[in-house]
Image (cartoon, rainbow, N blue to C red):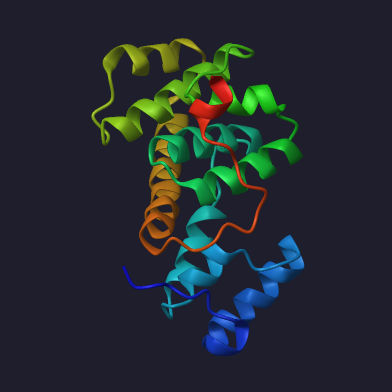
Length: 182
């Protein structure tokens, strides 16, 4: 495979340079994966618009989905980034590992969300009826379902870009789930 470089600010279009500036202000740096989107004139702006769009899911709930989807899609970059973000949002290391596995014994509602996100991703949208019923029984709404599916798509895009380009991880690297569970 050819090596994908992570473009530097001076190597991207002026529109993407402005987005890099915004990311530096918001995050403190431009994550390698976001910089990789800038190989396209439009992909970074489009992706940021999607990932920052309004949703019925709260920040912690979004991280539940991000972790479960990234584990199914075996994306080390996104697992590493979302492990760090999940810690900043109050999840413990043990909770993060459970969420990566698609469950949450510590919270019934988050458990239903994690199981749904994992099931949707594993089955490419052909969601198991029992998992879906459990999601609604836990108190989630149809709006939450649609927003979860959109978020699964959002995270899958990043997972696929990273899994294809293999850009280096610039977050503390998440350990393989099997190594941690052993």
